[in-house]
Structure formats: structure tokens, C-alpha cells
Length: 264
Image 1 (cartoon, helix red, strand yellow):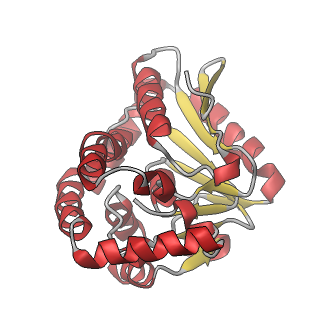
Image 2 (cartoon, one colour):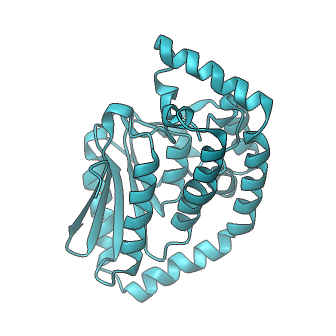
């Protein structure tokens, strides 16, 4: 098991920690593989009732897919990586049968924001920031971000965030319905665990029934598949390749530190 993702059990709760703080918990191939395996195990284990997804370091919950790793592989390898690991992982998150709580501190950007949006409850620290900067790199948020944010905040706010790539703070995120709670930064973990405990105390047939009914109402899969089609067109465009080339120069010069892992 990789040390980049830590999986722990606390009685009938699962604690999953992104553990790559030096890279602001940017997701690489090892982490995607581990997370996919872990959440499949959680869903199949009858002793686990709820999971909490958190991160190490405090500076960032997750800034998305690691662009530096992406630059180290060919377009063909990256296409296979996206189609057979990244997209199936995000789809699998939305097809879970058990509740997941995201405990967010710091930057929650790009694929990291999409990771949080796959949760059933999001608790965030007051200094956290959220954004979908994919357009900077010639892509769209194809890991469920457009689908979930449109359903939560409406098409106008979603277009505002995705077209500009701007970041919003926790209070704005709460005001548009993205977050369940905003608490002091040092209280995020405890608050998420308190919610998880309340969920475990309820009748699990009802808990999973609520989740299943709401998820059915949201209606996710068709839109997700369409986003992947659009993303694939963007991925092979000359504009996208030029944008990634610009990113490479920024990374070497130390510019754009936050963006180093933001994009798929």
C-alpha cells in the first residue's frame, strides 16, 4: 500500500487521508489507483457505515491532478491514463452506496474540488478556497465538477466559476450551497467526525436509502459521459498543448506555485 493515501478504520467509520502535503496533495497515478481500491473496499465492507476524506498538511485539501507528472508521459499514455483511471475513478465516487464526508482545509482546486463535490457532506475551514481553473489549461472540469456544481449552484454561477477560473472563499462557497458547514480551520476534522458519528447512529437502510434517492434525483451519469467527450476534444487541441507548454515555463521559473497540480 502506498503511503500517499492513508486508510484507517475507527470502529464503523473509515478515514481516508491524502498524504502528499509537499505537493499540496496533487493526485498522481499511484494515488488514483489507491483511492479507487480503497473506496471499492469501503463500499463492499458491511462493517463500514461512512467514510471521511481528509488531507495532510493543512495548506491544501487537494489541488487536482499532478500536471508535472502529466508532462512526463506521452499524449498516448496520458489519454490511456485519463480514460482508464482518472475518469473511472471519479465516476466510481459518484456511484458509492455509503455516505462520504469531505473535510476541506486550504486550497480545493480543479480535480480536488471535483473530489470534494463527490462527497455527500462537505465541511470546510474558514480559510479554504475553491475553484475550477481547467480553462486556464485548455480543458473543462470533466471529473464531475460541471455536473455537480450546476446541480448545486445553478448554471449561471457554474459558468462564472468555470469560464473565469476564479477562486471563491469558504463563505461564498457556503452561500451558493456548495458547503454543508464552515468552521474554524482547526475544527474541520472534529466537525467531520461528529457528523460521521451521527450518521453511524442511524438505521443504515434508511441512510443508504436517502443517499440513493437523492443521487437518483440529481441524475449524474449522462452528463458525466458527455463531459468526457468534450474533454477529449479539448485535450487533443493545439490550444491545450500551448497552454500546458506555458505551464511548464511557469513551473521551472517558480511562477504559479498553486497551479502546479491543479489540472487534469
